Length: 137
Image (cartoon, rainbow, N blue to C red):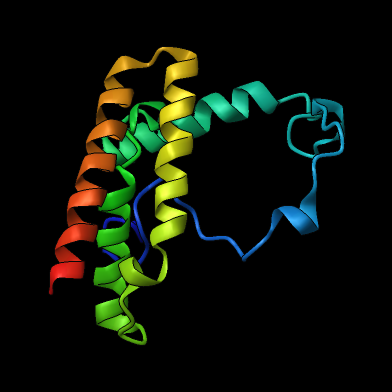
């Protein structure tokens, strides 16, 4: 609902603190270590939650497409314009955006996800076009 009301960026881009991986780490996680997945009713709880989500939003949570990085940045800019410090997020984060798109293209090539690869390449083209346009201003 927060995403739908435009108070948060796109679904799947959940808020996190900067460099959170430095605080959490990847220490060979297993389902047995989880408080949630170790429960006997884990699978039924998950199924019930998925059904509840579907009833509430008429969408299967796993079929919600992730927005392109450029749409994500545009939504961030709208939120920043309405509630933030009015900074040009695109200008401030150009290298991070480029790196994200590049990694997304590599990932889609690895998994041969051609439809998502097409969107990622389109993002890259749009990103360069917007970057050039901003330099000409």
